[in-house]
Length: 533
Image 1 (tube, rainbow, N blue to C red):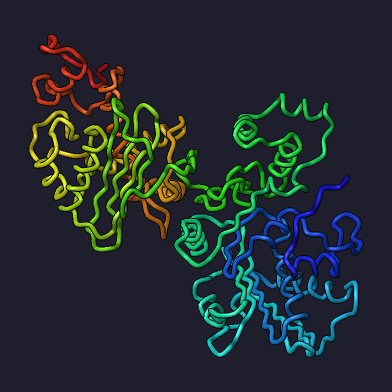
Image 2: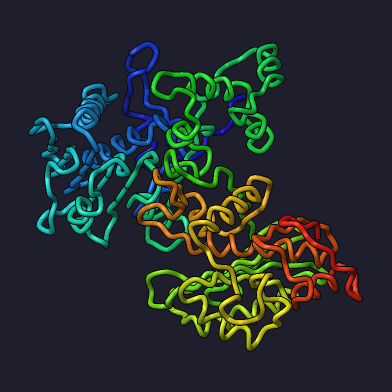
């Protein structure tokens, strides 16, 4: 008995009933039966949609067919499809003509059929297909259905789309689809998708990974599957993919074939961009992403506790130890002031505060409040620029024993916090990269996006990709600087690097002795640059 098929929209039902497509293998005309990706899209559409996906999953074919249905059945439809290149535009126009010429039923009356436009006189409708930049749509045009294809590859998409989207009325059953495979981080399309992912726009986000598509799961015999799964290749991340994402032997075989194909040349970054498994992989900073592994676990327990402040429920836990990192901005709306909190025992992000409008002075209050909330967390504030102002206020309201400073110096303001420089930034960012690769869990989409768009440029400089931010990244890096102190408090012996030998009679050295249970002070001998604590 065949399983019941999922109900389709009216447009989807018409497509399956009347339209045909060309079979990839036989090149024959066959009924257009929606594949799983097309079916999910058909049932989940909004009026405004962003679509990111793997290559050749049939999204564009579905939208072309949907617009064709609208032109045939709805009066005064103005459907516009814009592609990124002329060859793609021509292929799409051929596809629409194929729908019309091979329709299973009465053919629609066509009045005008040019290189870019088809008109339907009985419904007074028009279907235009063009190339980005070839025609400027302005406020004088009215568009009821708009599809921007491969928007991430357009030059100046924000400028090109402005007139077109202004031409789509806000009221009525008008439809907008902005669709693309990924094309690196920091682009306009990437920024808009991330906003949609966080629910900050009127656009609904649809993401289809390559494992959703049956054609990317090649048929294998049980014997072949056993051979493939018993010889997984770590250099291609195959054991992780099977363990964490449940890839089948057929999917592994497809992936290996694609990686070995000309042009792909075993480039994992390129494969992930064109055949993403997660939304993150669509927008990795191609060839230069600094953090190779970011373990995001989305959970219902990551919630907004108050404006600007998100935390993981059930934390803080009595007896657990926390490290807090902070990155300070001017508070004028350009960059964010950020607080990140990590739990030593669970090795995960447990809190995050972000605010573009908080002054450096007032940020100290937030740090003190959150630090005390998390069992008097060990606090590390980046002391560059406005961080000095934050630290000046913070030291008046928070225990000096719990504030990070240069271990070789006294408690003067100039010695407090952690100063990043051309020398120290690679160190702390490298340490963060190691901790992420070893399983540090994050829960914040905002932090995840910043980590994946943090790059090392051709000159070796570490920073956010153009158009992106790294405030959360640096706050998290500061928190990892404090993790060894959290480990000490938890009773773990750890190595702490120091540029120079610490003063054994400084306040912090005495504090260390107390934390290790060696009080009164143990005999003070000459120490090395790398001391076992």
